[in-house]
Image 1 (tube, chains in turn brown, blue):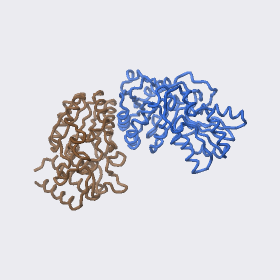
Image 2 (tube, rainbow over the protein chains, first blue to last red):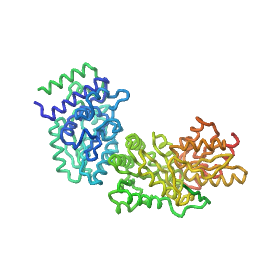
Image 3 (cartoon, rainbow over the protein chains, first blue to last red):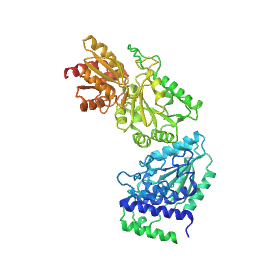
Length: 274
Length: 320
């Protein structure tokens, strides 16, 4: 039997496959690798109201690795921000679900992202603004590992610590792969938790494929971070949860046939049933 | 309503002092207004505000890219950000952040770029923005403004605090030549006709407005009647005004303190070529980099003087 959060994560993966199946290609690797994090966040951590996506006192989530939009859209549809049928319009002409997150197109998306590094600063600005307004809402940020090669991420890291953003929690999807290959070969991040600690962040590094562990770590981080920004480095696998995608070495953006998508959906449904 | 008080003299107050006082007033009047700077508060007359208004003033440090993203995020949670850096940095160092995190994301942010064109003076080529008008014009739906003098800054800046989307403002830190009375008011997108004329129209912005007024006085002595328009909103261009004066005078000169590539002159010429074909002679920097020097020396080097406008006017009239 899967735990409720694991079941939610599996449902998010199934819905992603439905999205990708219609278009036949997409950013599968990095969408799948943040799925367990999204399950934890939308499975009880985020203070949100899907009926009122622009509720002023909601928590915010900025997915700075904006190409993981499909994973977020699947989650939002399952949370009833919009009908599941909308997922089939991913990247279709005139869609409300573009490949990269767009706050002006999709209900529930808090910030437009896609040019890497930029969501780091906008999320930080949101956290600062909410803190200056005396709100008790939190801002969550999802960073990619390749994204941390952008200097802007480290400008933000200095700034967030300086401004004591204790309402700010980032996740780093450390799946070790980027478009052209392995991060270790291209421009190594080494131990990102240690790097953020040296910027005076509260930092934890955990296995990133267990939504229950992620949930537990977020709750612990909220208690422990004090007035420091926090980062939870998630050791993930690019393509996580779908062995056929994990096995593709360069799986940043891949083609997928309807047959393979259906095969994966059957497999995931079986996992749910145990 | 505005009153033109031009007589060639400079304003008593430096642009930076007026800017600092105007920002302070806005912060005090509206708690949602926030001011961000990238380590140039001491240069623009805002230093000290971080101590008196700590919840509204954010000294970001030397990180323009992060500053623009933070400004976008602040807007997304209901703040009204004004972000300042030198115009060269506002244009070149953080263009993608301005483009995506502010304009494309439909956040409401006002960016102030100081030291436009040759007014960057002794900071030289690295700090001398000839390209900022062009770059900001190329951002969809952006508003691009150049304050003509400090009277305009004091009056117009507060009007921008609730303006939707991206607004870019060029501002001189120095003492400008006085063009407007202190009680003048301005409407974004509506050009000011400072002087009527029959033979040629000079459309200018920023420090070139005063040069244009001077040129008109001298042209009058030659028997040439020149209209002068202050196109302080470079985008959106006041097309109705351009068309009216193209029809009335049949010859146009544009004058700007920046590269003619993609600037005010390019906007005017492009508009007229599609509506009412009229000679347009552009006075501005002819595709060059900046260098150190006094603004007066540099205006001579790059052809940004009343004399250059006069030559351009004669040329425009000759090819009517």
